[in-house]
Image (cartoon, rainbow, N blue to C red):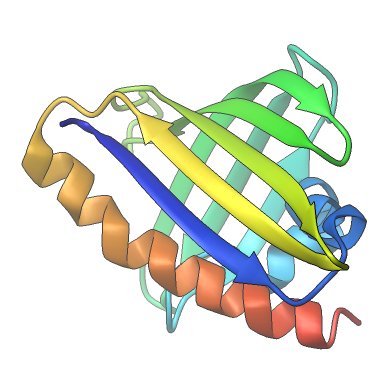
Length: 144
């Protein structure tokens, strides 16, 4: 299969988890894999609005961007995702769907990304997203 699904239980209300995905101040604190920082997070949170982020390991910048397709606070977020090439061109677009379900004050977050061109490309994203979501969980414990 060339899609990726990750489900995590987060110890925070879904309104806060949704805000962590949709507020650039929150997003900048957890976006990016381990040992990376988000140096830029801009978004226009409307359907058809664009988002763009930059993560860096201190030496190299990695830009990603996309367009919001569906925004249903605090239940669902759908957007395109693509890494940008250094020349400004975009790599292959995937579609990300994130759902947020209330579980007695906690949030079950289901992340789905599709369609990757190859299984290897999909597998290359698993670790990065898992590290992002570990940072998200840590941020939700102290969202200041």
